[in-house]
Length: 136
Image 1 (tube, rainbow, N blue to C red):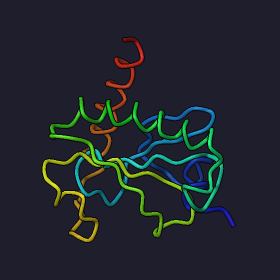
Image 2: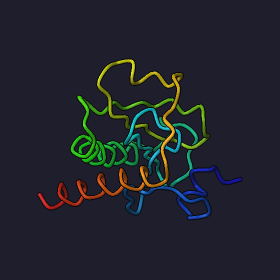
Image 3: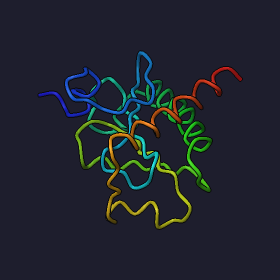
Image 4: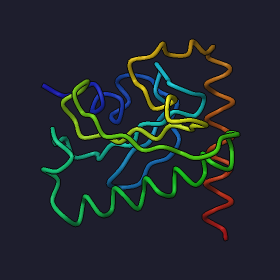
């Protein structure tokens, strides 16, 4: 059975897409730790991050870096934290979370409740920064 992330990638479940290429897909987390909290997933459904083959793993990190740079430009924050937990969904994924303190990475704390228009404006802001980074 396909994971929820595979269903999102295939368009069966809506999302606030940030970016995609032939191997990876990035979209806003619908239960975010912070505005701009983005999930980056390989399109290939592999349960654990470290089960990815080496070239896919390296390419995922490069793709995640590009997304993180765009998030840092679009969302006021001190840094973009990266977390790999992988217990929520059996599909390898990276959390990119705009942070101002270490506590912002605590995934057990209460999530933000954002409106669809807030999610959309955040997605557009990050997408614009990806375009600018790609042109540089």
